Length: 471
Ligand code: GDP
Ligand code: GDP
View 1 (cartoon, protein in one colour):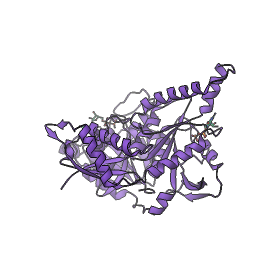
View 2: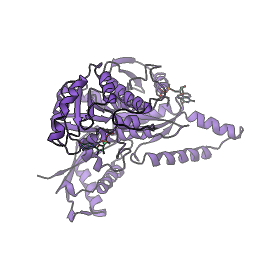
View 3: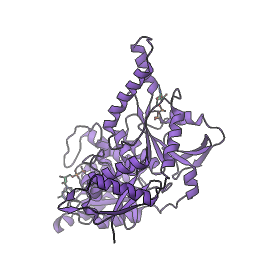
View 4: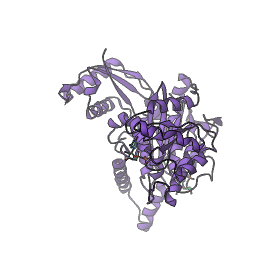
C-alpha cells in the first residue's frame, strides 16, 4: 500500500449544522473497537470510510478548528461572534488548501444565514469540488426547503438527515463521483522491501526541518529530490549505511516561513498525508513542551494506519542544559541521567498508552544526539514490517494463547478460533478464522495482539488482526 494516497474529504460549515453527527455516522462502527484511541468521542477528527469501492478519509474540520483552545462565543441563528466566525473561516481555508473534496453543510431548518453566505463566498473561489449538503431534512416538509440553498451559488443542494441517516447514500455517491481518479501504485514490491520510507511529523516548531537537515548531513552517496504525489511535495532520497531512505516531505517542512504560528491544526492534515505514504513515522515531540493534544492525534492516526512509529523527544539538549544549570556544573552521573529519561518516558507513555509498542528516543536535531541511532531504529522497524511468520509457528502461538486464557463469552456466545494465517506484510496482517467475529471482545483482540508481539516482536510497528467467519 506504500505510495497510495487516500483522498481527503473535508466537512465544513458553521457550528450546529450537524457536521459531527454526520461524521460520527460515517465512521461510527470503527470507533467502537478502538476505545482508548485519542479523540474517539466528540473530538475525533478523521476517519476512513468506504463507499462504492473507494476509500477516503473524512475530516470534521469543525472539530479540528475547535479542537484546541476553543474560543468562547455565542452561536446565534443568523450570525456568529467574531471569534467563532474566524474559526469557521480558518476551517474553510484549511479545507480549500488540503482537501480533495469539500462538503459544505447547512441547516434546512434555519435557512441561509450570513455565516453560510460568507462560507459560500470563500468556497465559490476554489476550483476544488464543493458539495452542498442541506442537513436536518428529517421529513418531507423540511425537505422542501432544501432548494432555497441554490442561492448560495454552489449548485444543487443534496438534502440529508444526518441524525436519521436519510439521503446520506446520495451524498456519498456524489462525494465518490467527485474524488480524483485513483493513483496507481508507484512502487514495486522489490522497491518496497529495499527502501525505507520515513515521514517526519509533528507540530510546528518541534524541529522537523532541523532534523531533516541534520539527516541530510549524513548523506554519503546520493541525495535527490523526487516529486511526491502532489504538486507541492518533494521527497528526498538518500543512502544511510548502505540503505536507501526516502524522507517524505510533510508539505511545509521545506517551504520555510509558510507556517503561521498558532495554526497548529494545519500540521495534523499535512502529517496525515505524509503518514499515508510512509513505512515509519518519526513523531517529533518538543522535550520542553511535552506531549500536546495534537501529538496524540497524530500518533492515533499512525496507529490506525498500522505504520511504524518512533516517538522522538527532540530538543533533549535543552533539557540536559537546564539540568546542568540547576546543578551548577556538578557532574551528573549516567545513572541519574537514565533515571530522568525513564521518568520522562513514563509520563509520555501514559499519554500514548495506545501505542505501547512505540520506542521513545531522546534526541537533538541541533547537536545530532541520537540522530543516527534513530535512523538505524527506523530501518529495523521497517524490516520488521516485512517479516513473514510461518503458519504452523503462528498457530502454535495462537493455540497456546487460547489455552492460557479462553475468550470470555459475549452475550452468551463464545468465540472459537480455528486457525490463523498471515496474509500480508507491511503492515503485518493476520487473519483469524473464527466461528463468528461478533463474539470477539476487543480486550481479547488486544490479548492476542500482545501474545503475537511477545512471540514475534514487531517492536515499533502497528500490526493488524482481522477476524473472519470460517465459511
Ligand atoms: P456541528 O457543530 O456542525 O458538528 O453539529 P452537531 O453534529 O454537533 O449537531 C448539532 C445539533 O444538531 C445536535 O443537537 C444534533 O443532534 C442535531 N442534528 C444533527 N443532524 C441532525 C439532523 O439530521 N436532524 C435533526 N433534527 N437534528 C440534527
Ligand atoms: P519545524 O517547524 O518542526 O520544522 O521546526 P524547526 O526545525 O524549524 O525548529 C524550530 C526551532 O527549534 C528552531 O529555532 C530550531 O533551531 C529549534 N530546534 C530544532 N531542533 C532543536 C534541538 O534539537 N535543540 C534545540 N535546542 N533547538 C532545536
